[in-house]
Length: 131
Image (cartoon, rainbow, N blue to C red; front, top):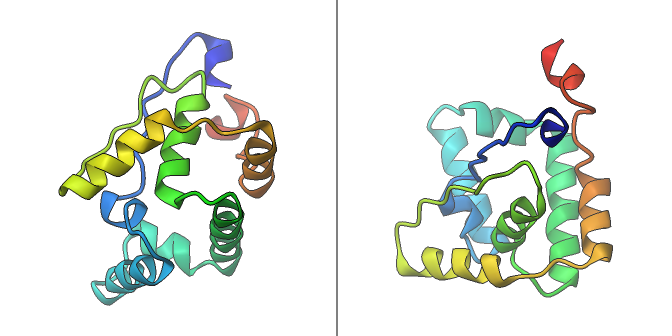
């Protein structure tokens, strides 16, 4: 973990168009447009069936708690001790409102455990990142 080495990390989130999309259909439309434009790293990652399954599981878990995926993603980042602050880029008032709701959102231990199970991370630092 970065904090064990005395460093802090800034994280950026999914593009606000995706994280702020209020419905699964809206997110799918945005993701589809990435593929239509020739992909990119995000589109390539989303083409992986395992990652798509994890994202679906994430969305289902978040929905079961009555929350929005983008807001939970930002709120989760705020629980990480090594994150100095997530960077958001709202283009419309609704996206800014969503980011503000994320700051006020408290994620319970059950949800945090579920998120860790869905996205366990690559492993301990620095080994998981160095080789």
